[in-house]
Length: 212
Image 1 (cartoon, rainbow, N blue to C red):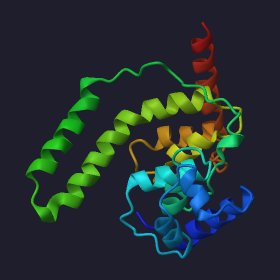
Image 2 (cartoon, rainbow, N blue to C red):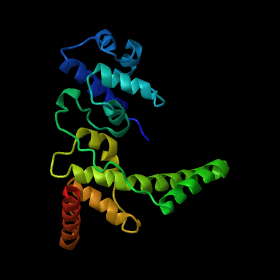
Image 3 (tube, one colour):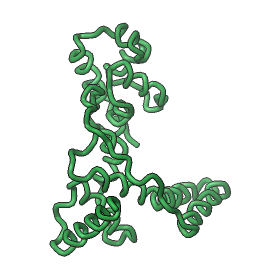
């Protein structure tokens, strides 16, 4: 995961100005990082191994939605001010069924990580990513279905924006599901008419079931 030091420096400086030209000491008083860490960030010299707690402090001190600082630094995503969070986020289904067939790949991936030689670790990590994706997929779909028809919520953008922006290979066994999620947030404009109708029918069926 790459770092975007210059972009992060820019958004931090601009946010301090938006908040009334706060000094770094004042940002720290609001719960932000220590002044030296802020100074490094604004010089574009924040360490690529920065701790998660530092990003949390930037979110607090600069009044951003949680997760904004990390997304800005690693994904070049504009931070979301906390004071614009009036849009509600529907939680989706209260629970998602998980079959044994979905759990087994995760257990296999766990075993691979514990037993794989160093040269095989990248393959084992990919295996783990695929297993986690298979479990999280239905949960993400449920949230996107529950919030379709509204502007994409900032928290959805922060949590899933990078994944939803990634291209989908036609050879991916989960290609249909991934395209459906992109369609739910209006990011699948190149779908053919038949696929769009199928997705609309699927969504409407889900919508009627949810309201029963």
